[in-house]
Image 1 (cartoon, rainbow, N blue to C red):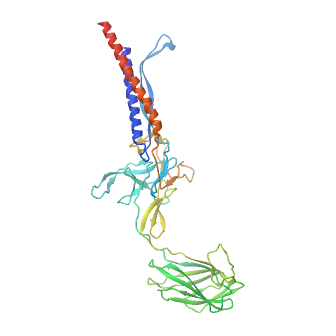
Image 2 (image 1 turned 45 degrees about the vertical axis):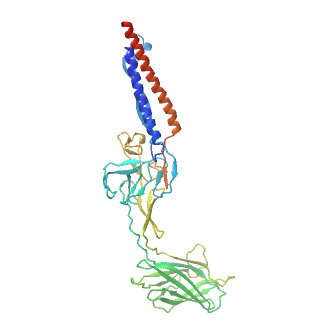
Image 3 (image 1 turned 60 degrees about the horizontal axis):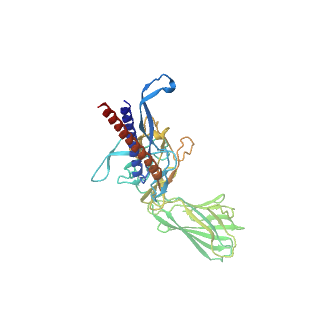
Length: 438
């Protein structure tokens, strides 16, 4: 009977609208959940028992109804906001962050006891170091990353918090203009700290004495080393440019043409350490772009000018923190101000990201419909993956629009009520028909 068809159709409508309200409820409750992707509801009509009439125009359908289908909005970008955490990242555009899930957590230590073999994908990038030196987000998902330079394979990533070794100094660049108007006997000194073979900082002092017209003696002092002093090197100038360098010190080697260098090997307790002092070129004048060079130009002052001292050694340091750059490079930072690349964060793109299997509002699995992941460097530097860049020290907010959800709730609520009214009306009509039979 038509009554029963109306009842069945209305029940289907109530069921479909209840599912829609459930999706809306989930969205609203996660409106402030970082990285959450909303679920919308699609409705599809059902047609059963088609009955052909005498005329195609008069064809009728019995027991029509509706079913609800979840429509995932994984492509929709959420608002990106800064959070000040240098290990946090937000994806600005296409791409998902590959992560792993622990099979269990040791209640005593907080360490994961193992990891699932499946790779999950997320947009939740509020990563922080855990007790095992892994980067984990607030949902408990662990970052999978690649070694520096790799672009197509990710695996379990553990931050190496070992100290960074010192780099002993092998060369010192020196640029200075000696005052041509200085009196004979006038002395000047410059110094710089260098790194010895043991990683300790040592003093490297350059001591100048004016000995005659256009003539200077250079003594190199290496306090704490053996020998503690080298030189002197007699330096002459012609028209303000470096002309000659000579020495009688057998522990020094000086050049006489081309590049002007002085080579020495002090021992600070860990063996002889070869050092090259770069002094520009013979016959060369002042070059503001150069890092080394000796000149003797007259000036209004009798002090050293155009002084530049640089050395290539680096001190060692303890691990301080990890940061992630916009191109996905995972950077280890140390207490001495140094840093180095420790890994590469890769993003995954899918042919149909909205068809990923939804494990939670922030984690997904690849499916047969979504297609296989294509990994690449954030920002798509080679123009093949379509991946968006990262935003450092930021997170992506939920992509839920609460105002939109409230509008949908009103529509779903009214549709639900109207389907309920249909059931009430059909029930009353059925009761009337039964009363007529009596």
